[in-house]
Length: 119
Image 1 (tube, rainbow, N blue to C red):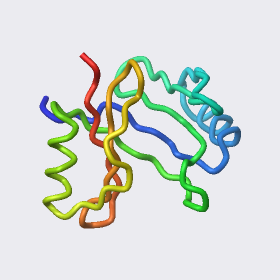
Image 2 (tube, rainbow, N blue to C red; image 1 turned 90 degrees about the vertical axis):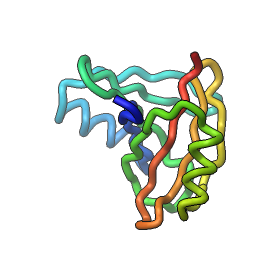
Image 3 (cartoon, rainbow, N blue to C red; image 1 turned 180 degrees about the vertical axis):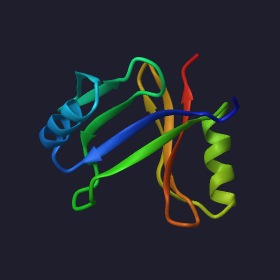
Image 4 (cartoon, rainbow, N blue to C red; image 1 turned 60 degrees about the horizontal axis):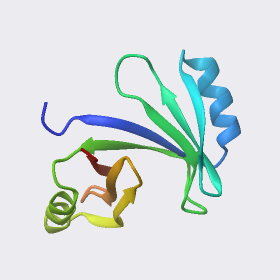
């Protein structure tokens, strides 16, 4: 499927509380990975789209889930979103060894993250 949802990420104000809640609610495997000065928790679901949990990078913003959608070319997708009225809140950023993403707010106010995996 073109432009499939490939990852969902919880940006949370309380990582420990979120991990406790979701580890008891669902049969997910949570794996902490060092990420510079912080930790990224991978959510492994077995089958289906996995995700991650991290401390919300925007101080004062509420906890929220962010969906990632696969794109062939991150710069083109980000530019197209901008031309269609999206606000780009994080321009194209590399995740070393993994790929590239940006974060946008669509014209209705919803957040979404285009994702281009490293081949």
